[in-house]
Amino acid sequence: MNVKSHRSVQRERGMVLISALLLLLVATIMAASMFRSFGTQEKLAGNLREKERALHAAQMAQQYAEWWLLSGTAPQPVACSGGIADSSVGQTCSNVLTNPTSLPWANGFTYIPNGMTTSGTSGTPQSGTYFSAPQFYIYYAGPGAGGDLYQIDALGYGGTPNAVAVVESTFVIKTSGRCPDPALIC
Image (cartoon, rainbow, N blue to C red; front, top):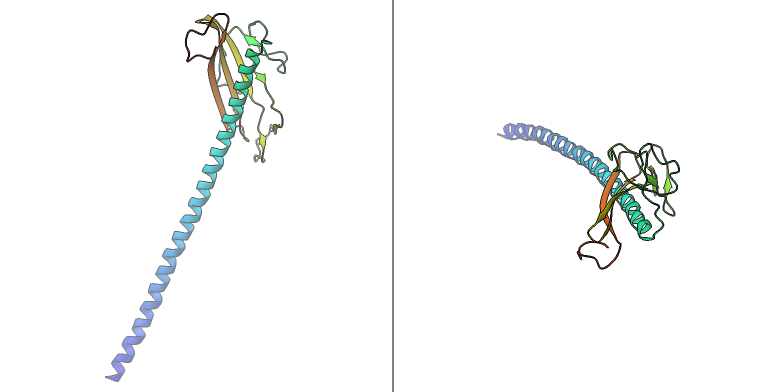
């Protein structure tokens, strides 16, 4: 009777070893999958950050264009077909932007805010560096209810050429009298 109990203990020790190895294998697989998902989440967060930076750059250019129109220094509308001769001087165009999805725009005004640095390369984005300066395009749509109508298209880049945002607004500059619609910016 003494011999039988000794053999069953040896068999149980082998089962514990196999069970422990299986648990270790399962834990290793779970840890590897967690690390892989953390890497994916990090990439998603980085892409979202770059998209937000691009959107903010486009909004800055749009707000600058609106301020520029309100300042009264905008020149008379001209036909903008082949591109702007001097992209450092803004202009108002009498024709709509032909292909807003073809970037960068050949006839857009480049706006470089104070402190903005651009890389112009498709390498790894550096902190605080944008791929390219934002641009805006102003189309004079003609007189409308309460003033002159303008369509402003603006684009901004994040740290890479793939992080791009385009925004558009319709802007009214009051010509005389009071604004007919309180919802409009006159």
